[in-house]
Structure formats: structure tokens, C-alpha cells
Image (cartoon, rainbow, N blue to C red; front, side, top):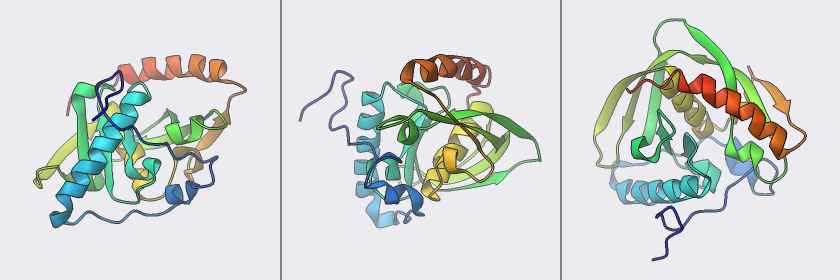
Length: 196
């Protein structure tokens, strides 16, 4: 087994909106059956390795590595220590509070362009999903955790943030301009890191 400098093995090629294989990003994913937990673990390992190779973002979904199955990983504070694997999620808004904010997606900033989306998200959601041990998990998420969960959930529905029907998309002329913009976005997100 080989490891990259982050300690994770086997990062996968990222599927982007600019590539020929991007149709997987537009499809609703297939659920993982209870007898497929070994497959879910394998997908989770690949997602974790790939996210580590991308300098640890907030999350990554199976379609982004070319697998149309209902699995994603996310962290409420962008740290690898707090990454969770989510299988077959559902979500339900709690209340009507909507927060609008900027989001970026690895599938729209790698391989050809630099885009971000200004998008409305529910501030508080109740989520249900299966973990890697096959246990049913129920949580209430708010702040950044809610935002990231909804972003990754959209991937499982075949929607990327820049193509979301309620999004305002912005394109940047180069990586430097994009990264400068994202520093401010991350500072705003940091204020909303609430442990679930």
C-alpha cells in the first residue's frame, strides 16, 4: 500500500464539470444496501484519500470521484479529525431560517475554471443517515455543518452548487483571484463552526 504525504492511500481522479466524464455529476445516486457496507467503506477510504490530496476541504461526495452511489464525507470545521461518512442521507429543514452565502466546489474549480456560487441554505436541519458500521444516525445540524451537509447532499441528487436553481454563480479570472476571495468566505464560515 502506498501513502501520499497526508498518510492516506489511493487518491482518485476528481470528476469536474469541465471533463468528458462529468455526466455522473448530473445523476441521482443509487442507495447503498445494508449488505454493501464493505463497498461504502471502500468509497469512504477513496473519498478521504482524495480530499486529503486536495488539502482537506469541507467535504466530498462519491459522484466527484466517478461513483454514483449515495455516500459522502464532511467535516463541520474543515478538519480531517472531524470527517464523518454519511450513507443514504435524508434531511429536513427545521424552521424557515435561510442563510445565503458563497460556496465553492472542487468539481467546479479544478480542471478548467474557477467558479463559486451564492446560494441559500437552511440554517438548521435534521438529518438521518447510516454510518460505516450500519447504524442509523440522527442529528440536528446548524451553521456551517448544515451548509456543508446540504452541499454534499445536493451532489447525491445530481446538483452542483454552481448549477443549483437558486444559485448566483460567479467566475474568477484566475486561481489567485479565486483564492483571495475564498479567504473571506472561509473567515465567514469559521464564525459558524458549531459542533453537532
